[in-house]
Image (cartoon, rainbow, N blue to C red):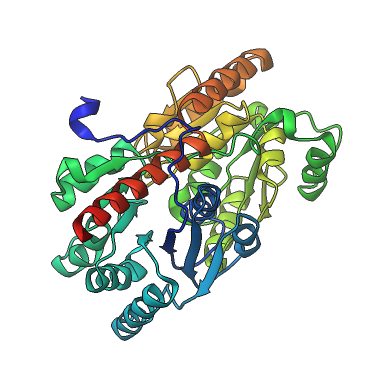
Length: 406
């Protein structure tokens, strides 16, 4: 079944292709702290490590320094705009950039800049790669056409088997054009052995957790938006009995990104369920490995399917058991009953039952579940595997393009 759904390109980690003299341009709206943005930085690191030059056209953002540290170069571009006039302008700017910087391949990671990149690549004759990072909303013909640019790559990278199946179903993309490359976890950063007690104590202090607080800590990382399931998690805790509530602390680290109305809704839920002191909204947390280390159980109850589900993979890498919604790419990263458990999407009773189940386990049993998850992620979802496979896609298309030019 796996072979019928997808094409997978895997290369030995020690056999990175030689990209000396090659320039790769990635385009993405901004460099915030999301999964697609982190992957952009990871690939800049790999491109430079393979001897190439890594450019990123973007409006910039929180990960600019990380991009620079990875050897990448930022080309500032109003890449987030969906305005047709801006998209056309960006197309001309990218065409000029391709000529000036002698760009050999362009990799689009989002729709608006994807259209500019697609047309620029067509006009200049260079290979065009896309990564389909998630299922896009919209059922109208116009919306489907707008989304379709992410399936127009010479090769289309899907970040999970679920995403690959979605691309084939929605866009009727031929199977041979799709390469499934799961997102990768930086196993050096997300390793319990590499997180100091000082870093954990810094998170404890930032989250205002008392030294003698022995409650089971549930941590739900992610930007504060309704589909990430923070409200669902609060409702699930509200369904616990008084004795169970006294044993648990739900922590919601994440950036509101201007969604103050949603934050108010969460605060109202906390008051309604009388969960003051039981649920904490703590804002953006930079040191996520230390945050996972402080947690006992990680939640990722997204109400919409996650195309991959980086939180679950990172948490498992940190040897923590996870509770996820039973749909999307998270079904691939979490092994039911072994590395965590999966709840019916959007169901408060199902999520409450999962929380109750993992809370009831002895700490030793939760630790064993976490270790199983850690082994699973290390074998299947490393950053190095993502980098190696994506470099393989680049090398394949660059070789084909050179053959055509000859």
